Image (cartoon, rainbow, N blue to C red; front, side):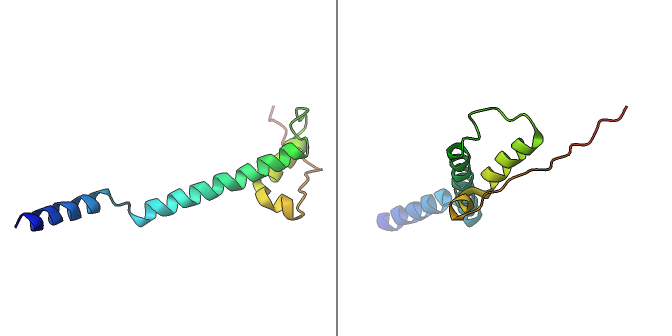
Length: 91
């Protein structure tokens, strides 16, 4: 009788502490996203994009695309933004 109660309470504890599958998927996706963006930051740093602060939107766009490309930078991607036009504010 006592073994049955102990086994039942252990089963209940396991069910209560188990993670739902969607939480595990969220954690894995978040980890992969951080690794992807981290690779992009490393690539931007290796290309010396952070030594001088960017002054125009083309430089900011190049940095953003390099970070977003992540590990693709190491497969030959070299994203550049050359023609960047920001909208003029209304008067």
